[in-house]
Length: 98
Image 1: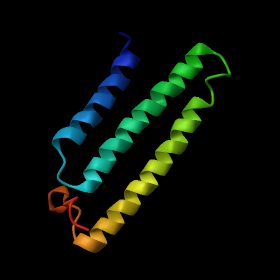
Image 2: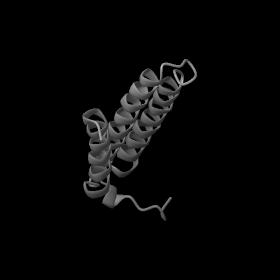
Image 3: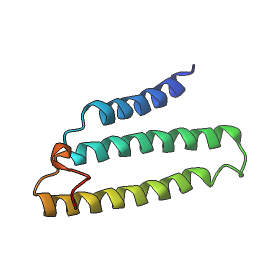
Image 4: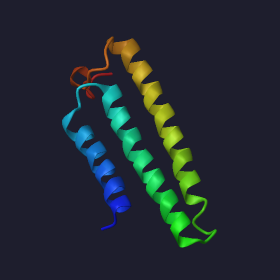
């Protein structure tokens, strides 16, 4: 395993661990998701550069576009949750209530 591969896989794993164990606030969960997407973006960019083909050059930009859409949807949910419930604690959210 190369040091760059180890770095990006450990960054992804740390984001996944943070998402799994530190689920108190919605904002912290969104930040963990963004960290995971950033490590995937950098790893995919380096992989496309390493292959030296133009076929895979659009993949990092597509992932970045999906990441921006995910971030905007997450922030919209954060604002809607803060307005309706008054807090962004994940424990106060009940999916069975409307």
